[in-house]
Length: 231
Image (tube, one colour):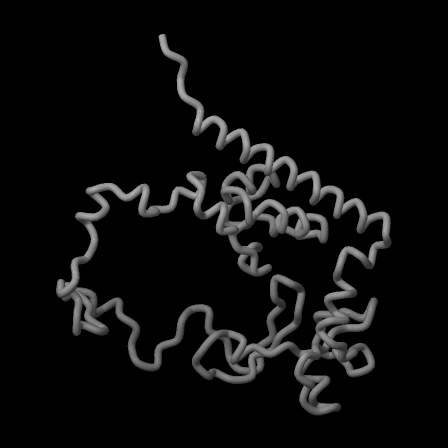
């Protein structure tokens, strides 16, 4: 499957659509898979609005939608679940396929290995400590910068200078790098860097999408509250 490359305009459109519409509808409008939209929205920190979550389109089990079957299937106060106190329990007959102490997964690689992330960043494995992968895998640009200049200050990041990006370890040198604030980095990555014409176009498209969403929502609510004509 080809990896989705998100442009600034794609991200702006997702920001406008995702909070107000069902994710499957957003995916259909953008020509993407639902999982692709979910992953990008999560990465951008996007959330559904309270208005959407309270609507019928969200399909959530609110108090008004609770059925007797749903209520009957809930855990009751004081009920003891079957697996209480069975932490680490495995059924008989699975001994041969269990992980053994000290065993390593197939994806394990030795300390010192390199990898390139989906965002094109070169990282090196520096340890085998437990925890999320960022504990073990560190950007080579960061390692090189800190070896020369010390720890990166809070609120700052290390990035390649324009035209200097590389994924070859031997070419990652201090003269190719710069340490800038996160605010400056955001400013450089914003669609405003393409000039006022493009920025205005993105803003107008966002306004248009909001009007389309509002019109769709109004039609949906009008249809829900309309009563069928008598025969």
